[in-house]
Length: 114
Length: 113
Image 1: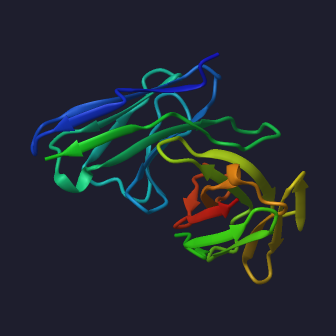
Image 2: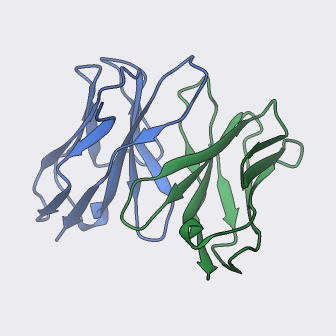
């Protein structure tokens, strides 16, 4: 049982390049989330999904797109990376309607845009 | 939308002392309040959470209190140990509307041996 995993762990992009971050969970969770964490700050929600085939915008969605084609995977895309998107990206998942509303986080992806 | 403020931003205590971190939230509809601990370079991990139908919850050396009227909640750590040193984040959400967490800015806790 791996929990929540993220690929890749580190990435350096040049301005204007694109990339996709992959989040996978093996806990059969309905809800999945993408957050970003800038140095010395709390996490901010980018996008989230309440089930397979659904996505919705969070607090800071501009410049990102997401897809949830399979229940266990949640992809975060950057179409044209900007230096302002340099951050650590965390994926999380949780179940709905269970006794616990804990969000389980992945190990993070450290992205640098030069 | 929800806004969560957290104080202090840094806290230094002697080993064995207590530590208190306070958060306020703006949306009276929020009903779930977790606390996460994050060590350097690691993922956030839940240490305790509380729902709005409960005023206090305790788990060994950690306790959380919630005042819905004043819209604030606090984390209490007793008998602090060096391994408690980390960044602590409070958060708030509405459980039945996506459970989207709004985080506070974090508190760096340093426990001096």
